Length: 92
Image (cartoon, rainbow, N blue to C red; front, side, top):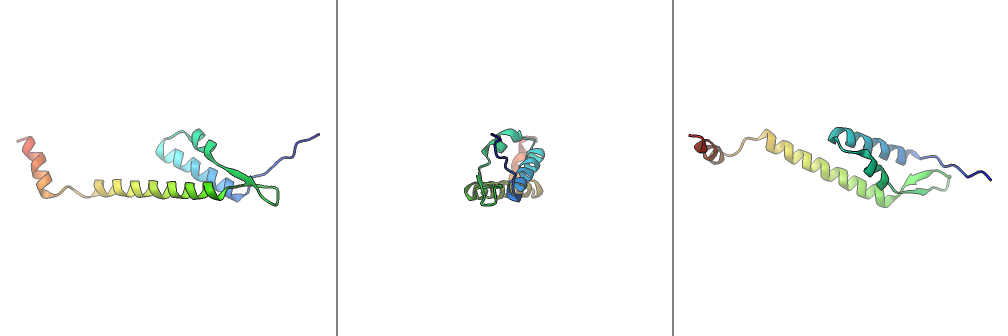
């Protein structure tokens, strides 16, 4: 007896693509992230990402973007004048 095959719906494909992009941008291993994806069988016989996983993934992405923006903010704005004088005072 042949086993039934399943195809991914667009939500799974999109999640895999985003996960791959994040792995490439951050230099992290994609395997563990792919193992975390949760799917369910849709009424049309395709596999889709669960709402729970989608919410977690979107939260994680938003948090990562926030951290990147905070890091960029620190990099783009020099420290206050008093902090700069303290640092230069160490080398005088």
